[in-house]
Every structure is written in C-alpha cells, then in structure tokens.
Amino acid sequence: MDKEKDQMTALYELRDVTKTYAQKNRKVTPLAGVDLTIEDGDFVAIQGPTGGGKSTLLQLLGALDTPTAGVVRLGETELSTARADVLGRIRAERIGFVFQGFNLIPTLNAHENVDMGLEPLRLPRPERDRRVAEALAQVGLAERGDHLPGELSGGQQQRVAIARAIAKRPAVLLADEPTGNLDEQTRDEIMELLEGLNAGGLTLILVTHDSAVSRRARRRLRLAKGAVTDITH
Image (cartoon, rainbow, N blue to C red):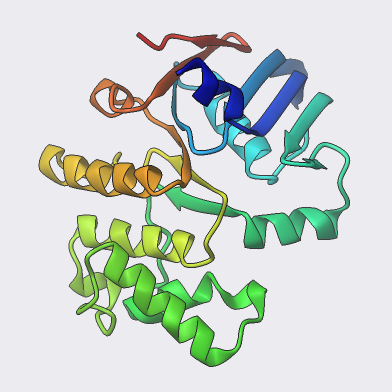
C-alpha cells in the first residue's frame, strides 16, 4: 500500500491559498491560507456550512476564479497566474463540470446538449458524434439522445449533464451538489454512476451537504471559517 501511495501523482496542489471579497463595506475571507493536495484518481467530498467557502474552492479548482494570494496548481500549470486564454483552454479540455440545476438547454435534445460541451474543442463532426454517443451510453442513455430535457426525469437530466462533462474526456470532474435536486433512490443511482467513473480513473471532487453522499467518497474534507480539515474516517 505504501508503494502505491508513493506512485500516486498530485493532480492539484494548493499552497497558502487565500480568497477575500469586499461585501457591503466589509471584507469576507472564505478561504484563509489553505494547503491542499488532491491526487490523480482520487474521490474527494467537500462539506461545510452554507457560505463557508465550498463553492469558492470549487471555482478555484475549476479555473473559474483566481486566489487573492497563494498558489493553485493543476498538474504543471499554475492557475493562479495563468493567462486567460490558458485558463479557457484548461476549462475546455481538462475539467468537467456538473451542477445541481443540470444547466441543460431546454430546446436542445440530449445528444445536442452533450455536443455543446465539445464545441470549444473544435473536433471534426464524426469525432464529436462518436464522443457524444459513447458518453450517453456510458451514463445509460444510449436510446434517449433524441429526447428533450423536458421529456426526461430529473435523474436522466443529470445523467445528460454528466455525459456532457465526460464527453470531453477531462482529467477531473467537479460536481457542485450533483444530487441536491434528486430523491434518495435517484441520488444513489447517480452516485453509483459517479463512483463507476471514478473507478475508471476519473478524479472526482464534489461539494455536498448530504452526509450519505460524502460517506461514499474516499476522502472527506470539511471547509469552515476559511480552513480545510480532513475528516476522513
């Protein structure tokens, strides 16, 4: 086991990361000197109180924002100082996003919604169609590509959103409350799907308020008062 740990590669490294905002004439610091390493292939759940900085941390990991101070590194790229075009390319190629609200375009069918996620990659049409078909099959919706979001259940819509995220073949999947709008049975089905993707080598980092979801992760973090604590048992 120790030998396996030695061979693991750090996907993310955060060093002394601080993020502050000005809010109604006061300074808010959701992250204060955070040090964190996330290994390639890991499954990490992040919990904490509302307003405790979970979404802020996810935005930094997703190259959607930069820290006020400190270093955020994804692989060999320092996100905290990278140019905007570099960050855009990383978001397009290396990072998949899944949200609580699915964020599907209601006038596009499942195939078209997944295809939208590949737009920035400028792939040839046959390759795009192949990736979309593979992603929909991977989430169990091979026969639903021509269905609009309104014709799908909430769980199926989240599967389409996951397919859109994985069709680009990212290095990491960032999920913000991915089961927050689902009933318990559907929640468990979506978590089984995400666990299967992680077992296939995809790094999974999710924010959740649901302890039943966080307990399924390999590693559990709590974020409160600007600090990250590892609560893995």
